[in-house]
Length: 479
Ligand SMILES: C[S@@+](CC[C@H](N)C(=O)[O-])C[C@H]1O[C@@H](n2cnc3c(N)ncnc32)[C@H](O)[C@@H]1O
Image 1 (cartoon, helix red, strand yellow):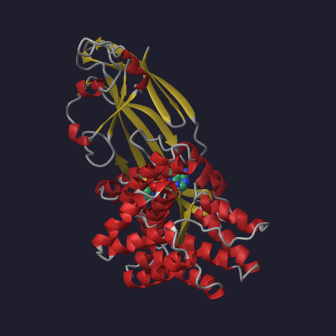
Image 2 (image 1 turned 180 degrees about the vertical axis):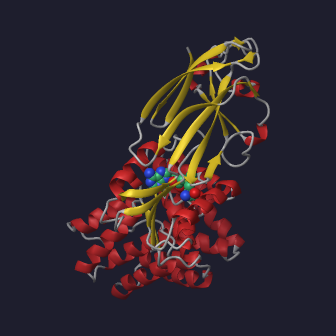
Image 3 (image 1 turned 90 degrees about the vertical axis):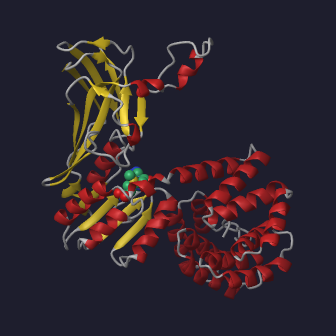
């Protein structure tokens, strides 16, 4: 299923064209819905059956994909793209021999097709046919732009990320101006960055807090909406807690597919719907059937607001929830304290020559934020007590900008290098989760807002500090 194969799509069918456009832009839920609508009007459109099969495969449902492609093949057999697409479904189900059989039928029908060869390469890799795999890799390396593109798309569709990244890089090197090459590299690198989910789902302290709150707050009458399915973990918790229905929205297609599979694997497909969309585009009556009685979200970066939680939760509460809906978390707070911290400063603007050279031109890369992995904990020295910076109530619209001016009493002398921050989430009565650096040691990093000037401060004096936030960004300055 390397890509939607458009060969058999006739021009002038605007419903199908819209579906194909959504498909190409990776809006897969929408594409599926549009293909299905189109097929109700034109049940014999084999191209549309095949494309629907592609979407089903790409969203982690190869069996359903095979059924749809089977209908395409009933209407038009011996057509190489359909045979290859069916083969890709079999490959993802581990049915290498069946895949190989279909590819062998496709090859003479379209001997020049790089899509057929790419599927054969995957079958060779899976089937342990090392020599053939090497031969095919060499053919792709010498095959020019079309070969590189077909290989990247096929590996990507098959979810073989490392191979896809290498192939996309080769494609992009051969066709640096091709927007599809750029798009592929971008999409794959953002997928690559998603690996932090593997750490996050192992954060037991976080999971315990959400589970305890969900079990206390969700009951059999509840229609739950979650923003940001990720692995599907919190949606599964809500279903297990007895929710009548759970709709979880996930903007990353790769994650939405994984979450959908996890929901099915755990036997909750009848009550949990995973929808691949950004929440602000989800509509009541469409993606969201009824207004939610409970809204759940864990979309907090280490500085709380960097994933656009303020805007997203305000939007969801107003548009997708009942007025009296409970929100998990109901409130969140950001805290900070002044610290001396050599390592945090090391990533800040250059303030001295390096090896005798003035490299201050590099300072354009400097941001006010430093993030430390937890293993570096303990190198900072607190100079003040913690101070509450901002408090957000998710039951009501949250202001997207804010500013606080503080006079912090200095407890011990030192260099005011940064404001060390952490956050708290009020998840349910009695369950508050905190990333306080003295007590939390897991997947969220420790964020530090660097301070310009880094003055030395004395015990007993007060330091005037201003902290601003604007939607997703927090900044600190001494005034
Ligand atoms: C921090 S992860 C949490 C995942 C999961 N809920 C959990 O707790 O393990 C946040 C997820 O929300 C998704 N996300 C962020 N903003 C979103 C939005 N506005 N609509 C849909 N998904 C969103 C991200 O792609 C990411 O997968």
